[in-house]
Length: 508
Image 1 (tube, rainbow, N blue to C red):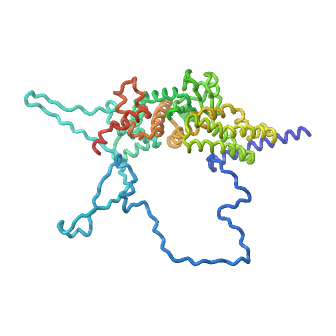
Image 2 (image 1 turned 90 degrees about the horizontal axis):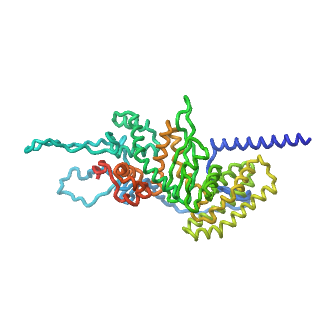
Image 3 (image 1 turned 180 degrees about the vertical axis):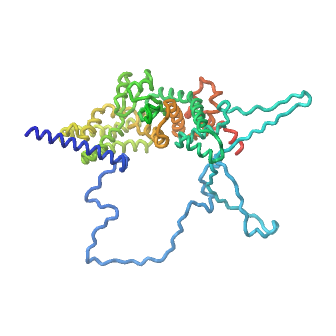
């Protein structure tokens, strides 16, 4: 009998685990992937649209409503756009088209007076929007000396290339910021009337990324010098392993305390890559914020760092097991939601430093202590089986209690790694467009470009303006001061008066 009970229990556990996996796959294919916690509706709470039953004998009340006219719904203000600007006139080329007044068609100029004008604006597009810059260089011969001279051809950012800096910057931005693969850009160029090869575009991307590599390294050095760093990993197919099969590699994005992010590429998910990325030296009171992957805790232990853990990952584990134990999951998620409400109060009040730490200790610490006390009660009361997904979810948080409490006493430590996950979205979004990198070197170039473009976004810098400037500046800027060209410092030093291409000079 005991054997049958044990077998029955094992089968139930196996069915529960398989059901949990099936629910996860269904959610990935068809369901919402949002982790936002929405409390369950009380069973006695009516839904929107429901009404109380009306007694049969209740007289029906009626009310006369006077006739009225409705306001015509406005469109996008295309008729008169003078007071509704939808673009930055300092950065957008404007072509002016003057429409004649039909009433003045048969009148002489002295028969009417122009007393004003109305302006309507339309957003238009030229196919491809590519331009050929034609440099005309007069060649002269001095009559007295008979010497022939001619101005030198303008120097390009890539030696011997016919690509203007504006084209190189646009090519890089289309590929890495807007995820437009090179073969699609090649098709667009052909449709615009250009006869070029696709390998030429590939070479431009490689050469452009190589020019920016020193800036990437300077930015990575700045991140390594940060006291608080966040780190994660995300997969990418890079390099050909066999016919029809690509190698699996990883980006290991690192986010620094100065709102800078870098995407170093490594060929695997092995523990030593954390050390290779961050090095063996750490600043005083350094903190590494991450998820629960053991590679980060091993690195922090080796260097004596404080290892902070991410509350969003602890919450995610409970969400994954919600279908198995919905009541327990709702209780846990509501407690974590209360903790996030405290963080929202800190943002609304714009608390910093000691004020932020004190607010967390007063309002957040009791919630954290009650959460872990609640965890212990779940294990004691319900006797959850080790194979139960909810058991694993709760154990994930309980085993990492020390790391999850770090943010309470250090105001510079975020409650989670969501700021890093938002920054690394460029990689999974790119994977949907270009799927893989043909070589490991190509993956490194992706890391260089995404590091600079994403950091530009974090600091409110226009990536196109930035790339056009630094591609021209990097070759002549002192190597010892290359850090000045990182987006954060570039904004301070050169953002007010950036270098432009000759195309911009023609437009202005």
